[in-house]
Length: 301
Image (tube, rainbow, N blue to C red; front, side):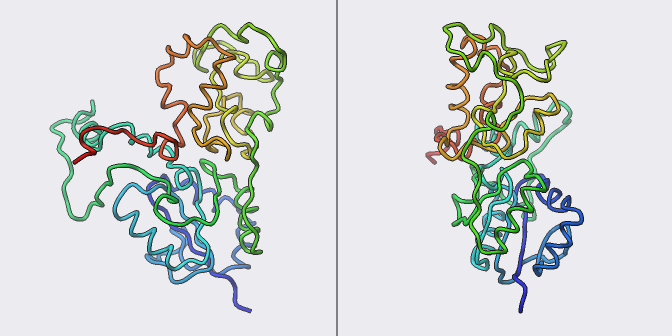
């Protein structure tokens, strides 16, 4: 019996999701035994995949080349799955959407403090940037999602097992607070007082209680607006959630959900002292939000 064929590719991203795939370690040998890997950037030198049963796509769509690669793979794949937060929601590359493309290029290549005599690169060999970064489901039909920046090897193993057995990918609909092992004291009681009068970044505090909820210590944590499933690894390392699993399925607007959730917990005025509220709340899912990009006169041309 012929093995199902699997292909992977990466678009605009950091390749971290493919590194997580390699981090399956010995489990990867089991996967290789069950499928025929026809194309996978870290493992093969195949430029274009043939027809396959399952395709995993890492990265967001940010260039014309990204879109071409994605559309060709969609035509050749029985099932196409978004691998990682960039593919699912736009990810960190999507923060470019906060600015006009020309402004982003000017900042990156000309105005950067370390640049002398900067010029904008111009070559036919350089993929042309699209005006905005998009998650892949805004370009093609997607049959499943594996969120995470990157997804854990355990998540990948579960997802591959489901895909190879013909099952649909199903992830939790709860937020990270349900998975978080920290104590929630004030948040579980009805009170008209804020649970903290201050908002502080991790580096501003001399000590952080490793057992108590970050929000109850005045530290911004996106767990209330982020899908569970990552095993709360950052929280175990005494760092607050950054939101990399993306929003829960019932809350497409991750940043707004976070602000709404903490408005009753932390003084709203103190949030204005955070350096980058947009970068904090919308860091991983801006292109998939209700307001996915900057809109101005340049967009009308």
